[in-house]
Image (cartoon, rainbow, N blue to C red; front, side, top):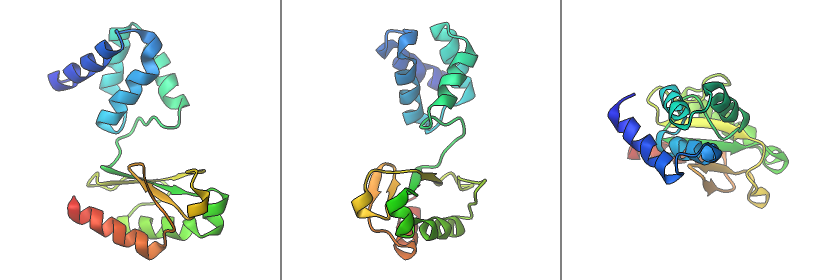
Amino acid sequence: MDDCKCSLVDGVLSKYDNHKSHLIAVLQEIQNEYKYLPEDVLKYVAEKLDINLSKIFSVATFYENFSLVPKGKYIIKVCDGTACHVRKSIPILNAMRKELGLSDNKHTTDDMLFTVETVSCLGACGLAPVITINDKVHAKMTPDSTIELIKTLRSEG
């Protein structure tokens, strides 16, 4: 692991007094920085906190919000809860996948700009269909408005 990663992780660990009881908070901060949990970083955390690496992996895989694979700059979540589903969230998802060259098995674009995920509910049922982009809610979306939003984000890089 490079020195830059070590100093970042050391800063996070010291913030939590290098105590293993704060593992989830430590992992959350690391993921906020990298958009996923790099394996070399998890090994380093295991060593520094004197925790078995398998314990860290069990925590990281138990919670849905943690990811062990890299994600794009823009993380798009498409709600497929009941309200969004009946208001046509699947055509929005399909339009995004087509525009970005993604599929059920490929969630992140090759340029690491976009990651598209489906979620069970975003808690904005009255605004359905809803997507979030980096946790910002976009309400009453259509396939066309979603593609326009993606084109705008792509131009911003």
